[in-house]
Image (cartoon, rainbow, N blue to C red; front, side, top):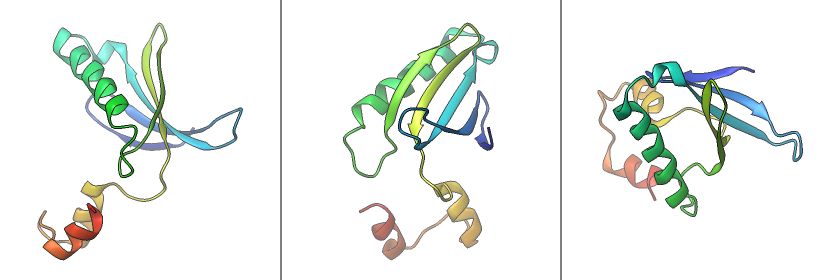
Length: 107
């Protein structure tokens, strides 16, 4: 699986659904990195928020989430391209977007 990105607690990898053959993103949190209650609570809060936002057209869809003995895994809709942070960084705009660009991105 190709790594799409990584963060403080986990990694995001590209995968393919065996049933639908669609590409998905797997956000994998190794449990050993979630070594205190606050970190686990943050992951659970993320899952709850993603479930609530599933009907929003501009937010990635949470397809499923599950736990293995070693990991907590979120199965997310895969969208090809760069994330907002990388987009702003690539534009060289000193972390500021114009109102016109913001309006287009956040419509």
